[in-house]
Length: 434
Image: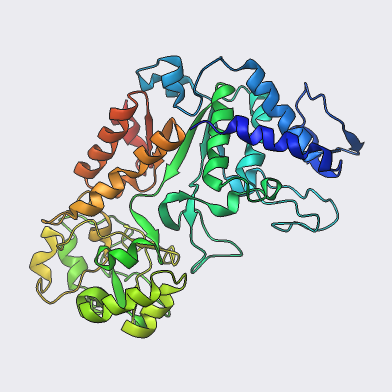
């Protein structure tokens, strides 16, 4: 639904209340800007409401009449093929960082400064950068994940955008204080997409279909869609090292060595059944008390003595540490078929190991159909609600072929020109893609 014009009307209504004290770098200044500007060194000071409204005015002035720019650009241009990606000039951006700036020029960077300006990147400030992108002939903007992220087990001061808490919500921290409470982050992102389309730019998003944050919202409804370990195993958790193998991916040929390794055997003993399976009645009571509790994972740990397991690489003996802020989604309700000869199928709780992660090569017999359907509907949600033009699949190489095919099918049914970019670890596979 178009929202850019409404947002612009709001900005215009605030111009008289704004001050010429909003610092921006020289590069952000459009060549055709007609508003009031104060110059200090290499920095410009503007009225933020006037500045952004001026940019939007120019976009609206050059936009087609009665064209719905909230739809994919392929709809607007009547394009049916994804070949546009072959000649596209992409600008990759992390909203939080790309559009960050110290606007009050009086302090070190803070998310919101003393004047109330949002210094972290926002969708509104990404919109400000569209003229800047245009100077470099950019025609596609690829954004790192904008889905609502978690700060649980965060690495550093802020959480990773890849630790997705809610697959169907836009990151609330990308809201700009200039808009107060008049617009939601979803609406602000929608306005950005509209503006990009008016400038002839497509918008692509990064999606994370293989993992979720350790406290992903789906846990409350489907704890069985996740993997759990004993809470006492949390400290110092790391993927097992396998003697006799180097830095290699799991294969049918080396799986026996993997499962016979003592570290792997001890690793499997750390896993527990999900809290709902452990005690259905206790879980039902727990949900009644904690369905709106943002710290529900802490309560699960206290009540059930289990916690979601950190993620890790699908490469055996990978030196990188565990991914403490994310956990794998349980794509199969059964263990990998190739692993059944090495484990106690009945008594072994669901677990994460290199072959489980690489479900594209080691599928289970019973797929988690409801979860697959949800995953396959994530990108279409953003196509239909925001008009995005393409996507990158994080860890797409670890998805079962059937699920990956379904994801592609649903996106193409809505927009045949939609582009999907794979995360690929083998440099030679680009030949297959062509």
